[in-house]
Image (cartoon, rainbow, N blue to C red; front, side):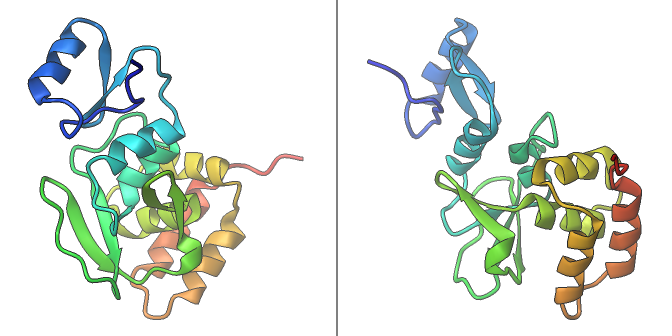
Length: 180
């Protein structure tokens, strides 16, 4: 019998998962575990986060940056959001939840996980993170294949969006150099 690529306490008791990790059969992927023959990548991280995220919620900010591969480690507390029109309850556990206006182009689905696009993630980090890590935003530029003009267009489409100017300054600083 082949194990699933991502295991959570919903699949096996925590004690068994921890014992298999100590035996070298599993390794930790955020709050979940994976068999050692499974490489960690985008879809793998998405499955791990989806295992602990209610379906109606969307991974955002540092959580989305981790899934996209712009952060090496998952955040200590996941950041999730819900469309302001969705009816949802706060998640159980240490995640941080906020209600936001979400455009259909801001979110993609990776397996069972809904996640903000690299563009939306970069703009949100530039706006909301008190100390944004320029290299994370720079990585999101590369991962998403977008430029500063795309960021500006996203910001300008949003009416009454706080911290637009600060976000644009931070995005300009994080923009990778243009090569010919």
